[in-house]
Image 1 (cartoon, rainbow, N blue to C red):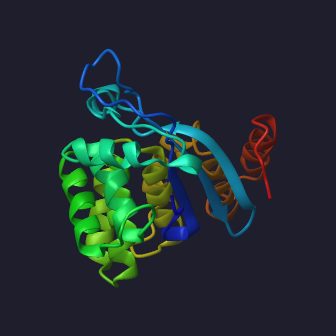
Image 2 (cartoon, rainbow, N blue to C red; image 1 turned 135 degrees about the horizontal axis):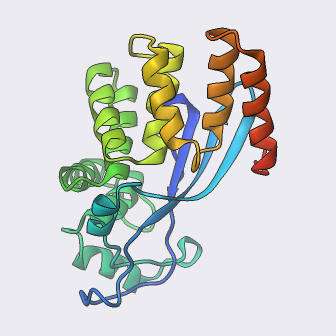
Image 3 (cartoon, rainbow, N blue to C red; image 1 turned 30 degrees about the vertical axis):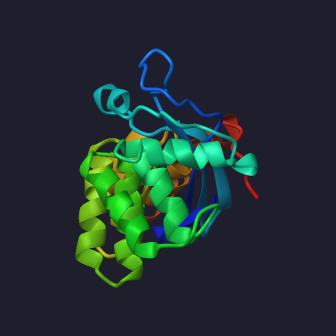
Length: 227
């Protein structure tokens, strides 16, 4: 699957690992996770490993993955599984991505976008974040921020980091360090790049050198991968 470049050079990718073709809740995967890498102008790329699609357990438990497979070896049965469960929020989002980008299926941007919107309407935080980036590229900042806030409110770590970064830098939204620290603090355990942004706020806004050093040391303690 094509990696989707998000606002602020954020990258996310759906984790796909094997395919289930039934709706037996005992055999499907919930607590869905995604892999990610965050790009930061000061630190380069910082890996996130697998992160939950939501820190809210009630939200996460509703996002059940019926089709999972290795993206390196997509087969016809995998696409059929996605088609079968395209009304489910995870499958709708994944199939929409494939159709929008033309990977493993015929390219159809309209149909792909419709599926991603359908997924977002069922409170898939990943779909909401995708739409935030989509409307940003279309020049609709208001809709972009609206979808970003919705995804953040569903406690998707990538969205919370992204929103915190925007508040910190004043990108498409009024600069607000209180809001920035709130969202970055919520995402930091899963998005290590949040520590770097919090460190920058500590130094440039709070004039707190000790906190700046502490937060940067936290990055090293967490064994963050810099590239």
